[in-house]
Amino acid sequence: MRINADFSLPALVLAEQQQWIASPQAGIERVMLDRIGVEKARATSLVRYAANSSFPAHEHPAGEEILVLSGHFCADGVCYGPGTYLRNPPGSSHQPYSDDGTVIFVKLMQMLETEQATVCIDTSDSQLWQDGPTARFCLLFENPQERVELVELPAQGELSLALPAGAELLVLAGQLTEQSQIWSAAIYPTTEIWPKGLWQKNTWARLPAHSHLQLQAGEAGARFYLKTGHLA
Image (cartoon, rainbow, N blue to C red):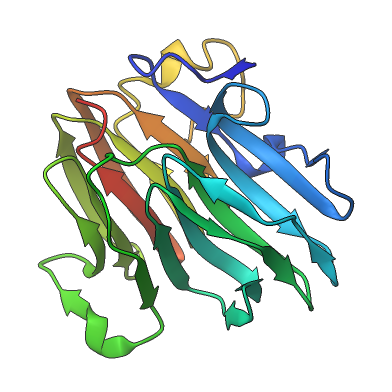
């Protein structure tokens, strides 16, 4: 299975385009954003657990990155609320479940073999956020390969990003308008959805190396996950 598998091209999955697909495990569904492989795959997905659903214990030979979007995601007796960021390094294992139901953003098999530390960050802690010239930032992880952070823009706030090594973005709250549109024609040459480049909550975008992104938040501001440096 190959979904948005050419990382030299931009990829965009608008919130209104997303389709939930049943997984092999009862009560667990996925939106496949990018994927190379079948069940054991290099994958980026939204995953939804129904209440009282679980996944069998399993290993992650190439690591797993998780951002809890809603509800409580639990593993091995510990539960994590909305806004929790997790990194389970290569070779780790767990048995995930949810009592109240949850939606998580998941990236599988995308870590360096040398990564060893487990990461758990509660992004609702205001002390973890720093003010920048035009936005607030919460750093989640950084190594020579990648930088992962949450970004928060005020109402009508703007942010311009030069991306020599590419980027990946998931809208978490509010809405963004992508203003540069320098790569939109490659994805939607004829559609009427694209002209204003409006990205609602849960919209996912991936930009290749040597891209540029010009964003403006809506009237309620915006918050988004941003990973950079990993697509050189």
